[in-house]
Length: 405
Image (cartoon, rainbow, N blue to C red; front, top):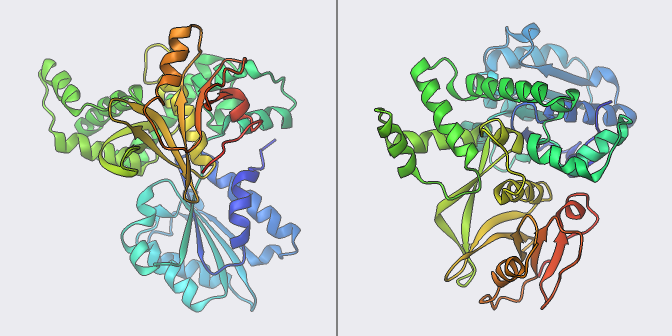
């Protein structure tokens, strides 16, 4: 059975009957289409007639004749035949050239509530943002969180235990990967999905040389997600193999990965100066499954995998997240919501006194009174000196939450 993703529905429901265009974005196969189905089901349950709901999957060959805004306009106008509000769902709208003109026309001439999805962040840039300023609201959909994975298992009567966290850490939360049980099948699915994203949302009909170059660079970036990205290291690696690549090309690839929602860039936050720093971003993968298929081995004690999980969880909960910068070091995350914040340090385990001192000691020079957390997989609470210790699994399963000031 498909999971009803209440976390996103709660955010979107207030806009069901709004004139604002609901733009649902996110990486391919993260569950956007299923979310649209849930919204349609809820509208039907509320009494909306089926003939007042129009749904077009623009990746379906049945609609391949809809090439541009004029085609889309003609299709919708032939379906809107009566008075009263229509609910229009346009899935993967980026395939329609100049689609934003059609959306603007629908808002101006029809009584409609519009829902659109796309797998590229350019959906909200360019003409759409200029023509419809203040008339759109975006919701980014992620692959399943660990909490949603648990809900999915329970919904489908599959045996659950918290040890499945290691499975989630390795293979991530893309919904369709749960159709497969063995590692080889999951890996094959994720590899095919990753290549599909590159081919359809990034490279397109580009040269094979461009594709190979992009695959190499994206592999490196995903395999090193959470670490300080060194452009010079990438260039050096190319030179050792008698190949050349420019910084401009690498930054271009990095931007393409962000637009396809493969990664998110995390800026630094100057804890002392209490301001965001514009340069030296860290990158985190949209899903740890994509990290795994781009590394030869997985080390469960790799803190960067854990950081990636926590970062994605914070995003789904609506936090703005930075990497914290101090005078002599850094804090993994500064999480901010509604003008309030907290600090988070992530580690695998705290097996020794030296490890405890290192992780809790990261806050030693910070005078900011905002709440401070250390998150690990330890089950024993080691909170002390005003710093709160949280078990990562308890946090991901919503058994505990963060305080902000």
